[in-house]
Image 1 (cartoon, rainbow, N blue to C red):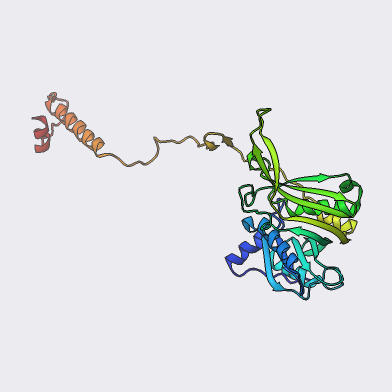
Image 2: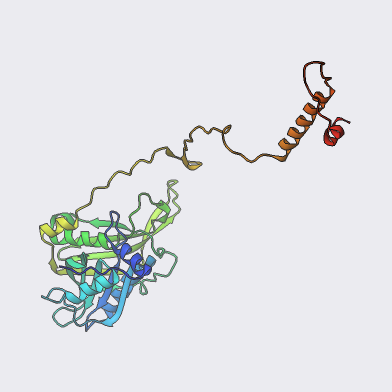
Amino acid sequence: MLRIVKPKTKRAKRMLEKRAPKVDENVKRLMLLQGTKSSSLIKNVISDLYHLKKAGGAAVKFSRKNDNVRPFEGGGETSLEFLSAKTDCSLFAFGTHSKKRPNNLVIGRMYDHHVLDMIELGVDKYQSIAQLGGGRKAAPQEGSKPCFAFLGDAFESKPELAHLKEMLLDFFRGEEVETINVGGLDRVFVCAAAGDKVYLRHCGIELKKSDESKFPRVELVEVGPCFDISIRRSRKPSEDLRREAMKMPLKTAKKKVKNVKGDSLQGKIGKIYMPKQEVEGMALAKMKGLKRERRQAAAAKAAAAADTPAKEGDGSVVAEETPTQKKARL
């Protein structure tokens, strides 16, 4: 039985709520790290991937060497899963270099902070952002959503390339949005498969004036990084695990609130029903003006009674006029 540790501070509680499963998940974060031995090419690959994904805190880069991480070996995933749970990352890229597998790059995905699937790639040729002048005018903005163009039917027919296509789309998906500004589409990843190699080019989109039509002419400029890669090994999840990872909860309909409706101009509008109030029988504060009117009415009544003469033999007694009544009468 797992021991559930309750948060002791409000900050820890907010962190656990942020990492908890949700119907609409957070943006997937990328974890970048390298092994004991790595070449300068692999270091440039890790740095450029971090540069593409760092906007909005969507990437975490480890500069220390990790000798305990061996993704395709038994027990070599423990350190990787621990770092994934610590940094709340569901994507990882691990670079190594050895004589047997030079310029090796392993990319993969996590489910519940356990390795779901991964692909081992060999980087045969690489051009960095600095080599292609990525800082010039054609360079895309940080955090912009890229387009993808997969050339060739091999990405649909071959299982390894279909797996790589799914992995690349998941790596650069970013935040899911319903609409997007067409003017913000300033970069595209062009992927072409030829034989056993895959050519990946990151290009910036330039809109130039066209003499033939009123629409602008689109030109692609390589801004880097650009890869020539080959697939070495891959590990796919089992069908049961894949089905569990892709399961989507049923979205419950929002409960309707009575007497509340929305308006585009006024926002939220509500109706309040009040019972009938009996104001006549309520004990309200009496105004001073009403007291003055009552005194005047009493004085007028007393003056009228004094002016009325008493009849003989009726036994009525006329009261003597008080000084206040006399003053009011005069």
